[in-house]
Length: 199
Ligand SMILES: [Zn+2]
Image (tube, rainbow, N blue to C red; front, side, top):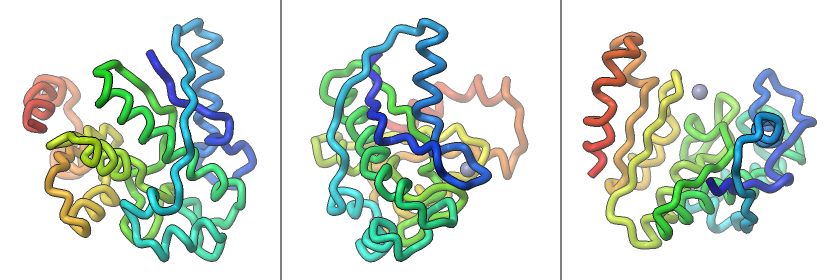
């Protein structure tokens, strides 16, 4: 499996309750220890223009210039420096899979609460939405986002609605979890239908 990873997407020195900024390096370290086979691929960081495909340009500029609080609620310059790489990893993996049909992986987290013009809950930029927009620009008619986090992907919903991205099919387990509670077996039975509904 191809893994789109660069050391510059991981930040160990972030003062936050959430460890998500340092997860990319830890995930790869753990896979190496477990002897899981994978190939690390290089990629380019996203530009500010590319990150602003999914966000208000003033918000993106504010985060990158450290004038706005990021999704962790701080102004850590290392987080700002990592964000183009974090977003670039997700976009590169999605484009690779779209173009080649091969499986790929982006060891990133902290996207789905990031809304069009503000971050929250440890999410600064919504690279799920960015990846969907870039894959659409590359020619895909519809793009599915299967979000299995226990929290509602409210930021993704906000961006889809705000930008009218009607080519994105979005499923948030967290949204359903709030309404129906958790029944893993029932959910696994319905998963094929959920994925089919993306077509
Ligand atoms: Zn969450």
